[in-house]
Length: 523
Ligand SMILES: [Zn+2]
Image 1 (cartoon, helix red, strand yellow):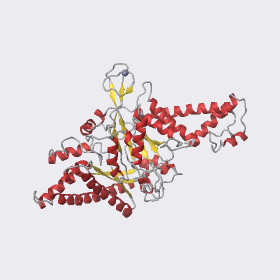
Image 2 (cartoon, helix red, strand yellow):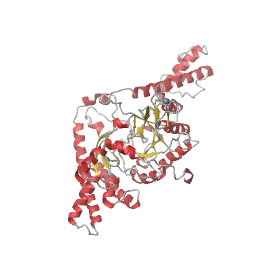
Image 3 (cartoon, helix red, strand yellow):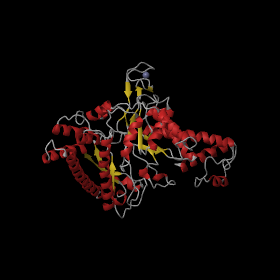
Image 4 (cartoon, helix red, strand yellow):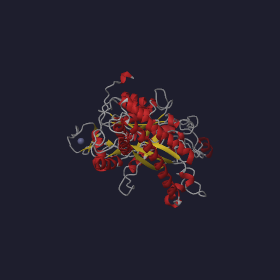
């Protein structure tokens, strides 16, 4: 957007010259500013030499950007286009542009996020802001965009957004520091593109997730137990080993079936006419599109995602513990390694971007559990609730500190190439502890977490608009008409009780807070 900011600046500067400095603009001047190519930096005061006009232009420019961002947020929170009654899901990745023009835009995106929408300063639900943390750019005092990182943290403390993407994470190795379109970015929920085997390498723009399939692992663990029991009697000391071996056989078979399903769907999608999504192809939104080759020329750069659900319950069934214990983590790593190895193998064999995906499973977490319970009944620590634990997440009811949660999940995030998210739930507002929040985000980044989100209590009075942590009664006007914002899947949800099924609601209610018990001073 830098060239457009420059263009706007020149427009305002010309006005300033005319009305403040009484100077008539001629062609020679326009050339000097690079108006035709919009190449002069707005900070080049040798070129923009008249101070009165300069100050005026800068002020007008900032106002214009602020209003443009306000307009964007407003539109994204009021357009009802997705299936006719839903807001389109939008995410914006930002934070790495160090040019003055780009910094102004990032600053405005954060400023408007903090201000909130409309007269009541409501927290905006979209766009999902994603701040791209990058070493040498915005992580430490002295980095050129450190001030924007601090502002991002303030926005997170008050509005839950932005989340944090890790440009330097190991899975994005080989990106080009001179091409921001290769920096790690993600969709708000977690979906991300890995390295493209069809020539675009770490390019992120113009690519997407073509289709996902999710493997419900606890069901496979139950099958493995049944088969092992038939082969070996209960008291056999090899029963556990046999169960695990059987589980890996079944899982491997299912990963292959997932691959076959994805290829079938991919071929079907590729057989569609470009007219089915004309806008994308005509406007170059899908990178690589060549009309002579058909839409596969663009789709082959996208991701085929092999997802998973319920690692915690799977481990519980197989070895009676989960990955919060070393023994569970050892087996978890073996499982994830199989996913990673197979995806890499398929990627090379079929020349398609298969990737390991830590599925959001917004509905599946409930529907899969319902079927599981119908078949196997209630099993302690597995099906004594209405949902399966999200992907490889630590179970939401496990009590631990935020740093410990990061330590555990960061041992598994590296296996995922098609998207994952790590959350922590903080027990109290952090508006007055931005330093603590900074330590937390930097800790997650240093542990190679690709995508990190922090949940803080966010209550809003629907009568006066006051936003803070106050649960049921507004401290400003005494109203009990309160909305409690929650982040359920990466995006915010206005009222999760109507937006999500029973299983997901229960999951949100069972989430324990990750208390700052292990003090920041220890790190
Ligand atoms: Zn109020």
